[in-house]
Amino acid sequence: MAPPKSLPDPIAPAQLDASGYEFSEQIGHLLRRAYQRHLAIFSQTIDDPQLTAVQFAVLSANRRLGPSSMSDLGKATAIDGATVRGIIERLQARGLVELQSSPDDRRKSIVELTGRGHALLEQTTPTAARISELTMSDLNAVERVAVLHLLRKLCGPDGE
Image (cartoon, rainbow, N blue to C red):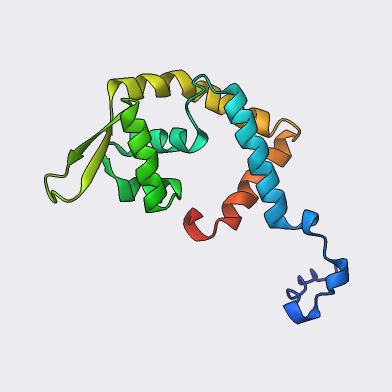
């Protein structure tokens, strides 16, 4: 049996031929297009037309973590602090979350789902799972496992 071939070293940027570069075949472009497709499916399918995918992610993270700081919700959802603050303000305006001062640090706000927030998650979570299925509908079972594995790997160590 022949020994396994090692993978080639990555091509140094100086070695790339610009004439062969096609942006539409690059990972960033393809990831963006796949994400745009997912967002379109989400907005067309979700039970609450006012709910965005990132709002759903923040609500879901808050349900999983329990009462949480905005910073913790930002880390859990990979959303920067300023953006997560705006999302939480919109969710609060809809009565889906409430903010309270932390008993440990009065400068810190704790985000907690309201009854309406819990009810919305109960209603929309099955649809969100269906949205994931619709996004991957052109993939067979093996491809679905592979793409999720590879995306987690691309996110870096520990999904960071």
